[in-house]
Image (cartoon, rainbow, N blue to C red; front, side, top):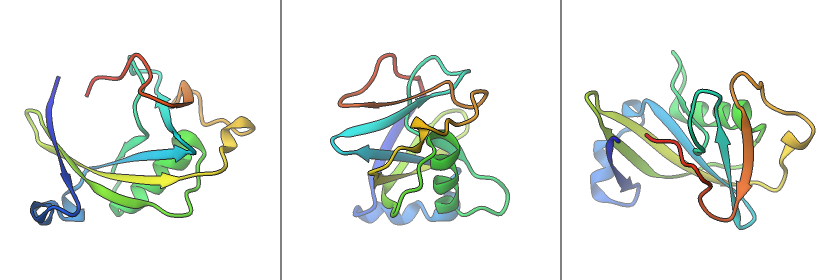
Length: 132
């Protein structure tokens, strides 16, 4: 399992993680008191919608794209919480966003099943969780 650390955007050290340094966007989407989780076909467990940056995208564009591609969510607003640094053989930085949603369109328009096997809303962390 990879070691990781979280830095809040309010922390002075967050300046060390400019948007251009983030390779991933992770989104914690709240539906009332529950959170939205997904499970991809090649993953052993549940995780928050997360995706890598494509050429020419800003990290905010990555977050918006991933929310739609994986959970069919169009968030009215994304709030930056901070950054997670994964210390693997190659360090990776993920910007972590949160949003509140009142509408889940996957009830009638599901994402591509080759990319997302399941979507769910949970009061706590679902089991099993995907390893990082």
